[in-house]
Length: 194
Image (cartoon, rainbow, N blue to C red):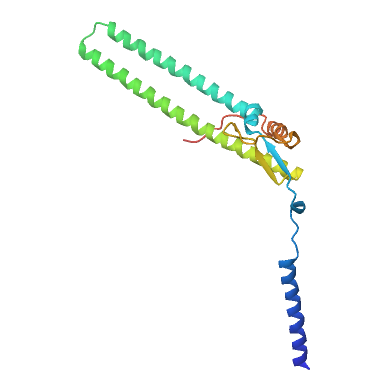
């Protein structure tokens, strides 16, 4: 009796496992809406030229470069005037040489200062742009999930049209711009260590 019960349990277990295997391999798995793709498109060039955060990044960059340029030109002008004064002064050559060395050192320091400032600005804008790109990708994924898109294509690649035609109703660029403007209304230049 015990042997017979073991055989019955074995057969039942085998049938259950076989049923699971058959179900797994032969029953069609549900696909995304039975194979129907929901596609959206975006125009990254429009996003980067029309959204407020990207416009603000460009403005910040232009302001920082203008400020730096003005300061550099002012310092350069002072040093140039000092060189001109040195040429006009009738002082002994040894004193002229010392003054010239001091001015040469100022020029070298100014060049180092310009280079350090440029490196700092590059790091700040890289950081800001990376964060902006990350937020942009999050918004695109959010819109895709919200509207049930399983594919989002960019109509432009390096400012060249990659998609020749798409139904205008597929374009979610305006929604991306709207959400990006809403989520990042006030960008500022980040303060980085070093």
